[in-house]
Image 1 (cartoon, helix red, strand yellow):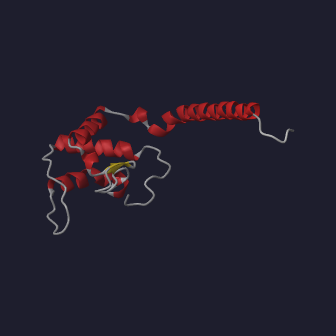
Image 2 (spheres, one colour):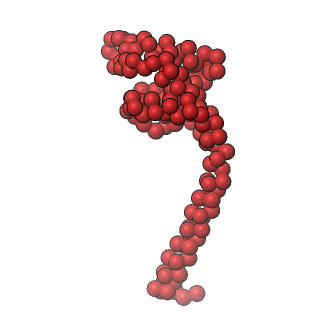
Image 3 (cartoon, rainbow, N blue to C red):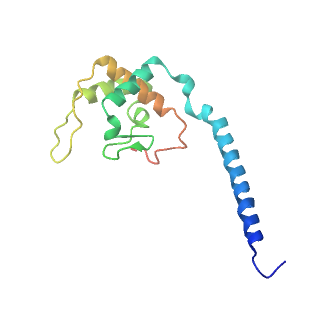
Length: 146
């Protein structure tokens, strides 16, 4: 091997490394595309879940809350709120009561606004949060309270 580093050697390293990492990128992309359907629970989408997502967007919930780590970090993470607040038996009654008693009026604490959602909208929001909680997130959030 030569004692000097030639332009040809640098070119070969550049092109060889580029091809190698491009192939790694393609392999990881393929792997993601193959595992995504099993992780996303897209087969469980219902009209109620879609309407709940619409309520979520219309009221800009992501402006304060995070969902699966995306959004503002002002209010609690809601990716696991379904599991934290009662699951199948207790979540809908909890969400109805929580939404009706807003704002709480606790001194020194910013309040969640009263959105005056209908019972159907709260049910749809509950279905959306239930659906979101079933997405395989590799145990995100890292703690119980988000």
